[in-house]
Amino acid sequence: MEDTLPQRLPAQIAVKRKPSVLREIAQHKYLYLLGLPGMLCFIIFKYLPLPGIMIAFQDYSVYKGILQSEWVGLQHFITLFKDPDFFMLFRNTITISLLHILMFPAPIVLALLLNELKNATVKRWIQTFVYVPHFVSWVIVISLTYIFLSKETGILNNLIHTWGGERIELLFNGKAFYPLVILQEQWKNIGWGSIIYLAAIAGVDPALYESAKMDGAGRLRQIWSVTLPSIIPTVIIMFILALGHTLDTNFEQIYLMQNPINSEYSEVFETYVYKQGIREGEFSYTAAVGIFKSTIGLILVLGSNYLVRRRGHEGIY
Amino acid sequence: MKAFISAGSHRGMERVYQGILTLLLLLLSFTMIVPFIYVLAISFSDSSNYISGGFMLFPKDFSWEAYDYVLSGQGFLNAFKASLFITCIGVPLSIGISSMMAYMLAKKTLPGRKWILNLVIFTMLFSPGLIPNYLLIDKLNLIDSWWSLILPGLVGAWTLLVMKSFFQELPSEIEESAKIDGCNDLTIFFRIILPLSKAMLAAFTLFAAVAYWNTFFSAIMYITTPEKWPLQVFLQQIVVQANVNEFTDSGVDMTRNQQINPEIVKMTAVMVVTAPILALYPFLQKYFAKGVLIGSVKG
Image (cartoon, rainbow over all chains, first blue to last red; front, top):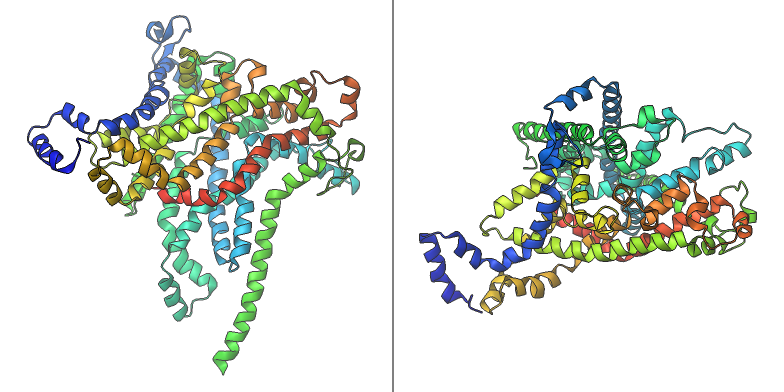
């Protein structure tokens, strides 16, 4: 009630002349109050773990804690780089990431196809269906994979068997691991990924298509010369975001698809940190692995963002 | 005349083009839902009919026995209770806290806003990793508590940035006139802004509900007592680890157990865990695309 306009104006002028932090806070106290629970969550769950990074440079002991444990410098990082497992982890992580990046255009292609569809009802139904898998859990996706592909009971092998063929092993097979993981990812997320591009396409000025048609451009030519250049900014932002998550192989998916037979191809930084760190209790060493991963990720985002800005496009920050 | 003919054949070409396109996209959308229909059909089929069964989209000899078996097991009840708890507590808390903070961040003149915003964005760029997070949960004495699955996921940078963009798009005149009428920031937010944001809130409610319902990784990390595991872990035990009995067994006599084909039990478990999401989806679907797009990707 005391915040009515005539009373507040002189107060603001006074603040400008003599800035006082307390008075500023008092003036916006309700706004800060609204943000307080959220800020507390950020401090506790995103910032409080940060000092935990220090244990990567220590011989961390659960009993002594972060403050009392012995410092060992870069020893864990040196052990990591000398570890023969490191090469395997790095190779697997990079392979999966590169395959994901290779599939980056898939949702763009889907969006372009959907956009060509004239019948609005059909289009809406198709969209409804292709978004569904995004909302089911990875456990469901992997369960379905098991149900469909299992050697003894899976529908695929049952069909092969009825047609007189040999049953094929896809789940306990190192060679099939990457194709399966990529297919699962596409099945789950291609529809969802197309939403953002569909929105970008919807925002293109229709006059551009009109003038392209006047110049004699066909369907493909219109996509190539009007649609694609118009959605490039969106594509670039999505690409930077994708690069930032390059090393974030999806833990749940990889972990659930993993078995002793394919582990040579499927062990990645995240599954390794979980197994060695939390299950085996090697906190310091695996914290070092985690930092290595996060740092490379940070460099990739900042680096790609910088390159994009230098080329004259708008980056994400 | 010439122009007329070419326009006619052009229309024919267009029909063929649309036909092929529709067929292709329908095929794609079928691959998305056929797995669910197949699993649903088998879960309702009688065991005796499913031996090494062919492909089916309708149940043969409709039967509830597999659902009876899965739903009556103590394992399912425990897991369902856990998932219900983390979802019902987590979603309202998450939406409430996130929207309140996003509204604060949307106020461009707020002193210190830039600072807070940068601290939020930093969490998108660098994460301390699994181990420090685990040690924190341990320090907070949350290991083996359902709160360890709820609290860390309450607010996220992406949600905040999208919600903030949404609030910024709202016409500021409404707030100004409310201010003149004597509202403070709290009453403006709860009485004016929130009712105006229903579509956006509905979208984020769906996302939060899905995230909490699908909790798996944090559960296997933080929950050490099997009786407290949520549904996704229950499902993983049944399908991926093939421990059909471990979870559903208790209280059901063995003679009945052996009659049910374990494959049917697996498919039933898949349906039971997915059903709530699939049931919620059509109601919120009209909101989510709009909700996501309002903020676009840019912070």
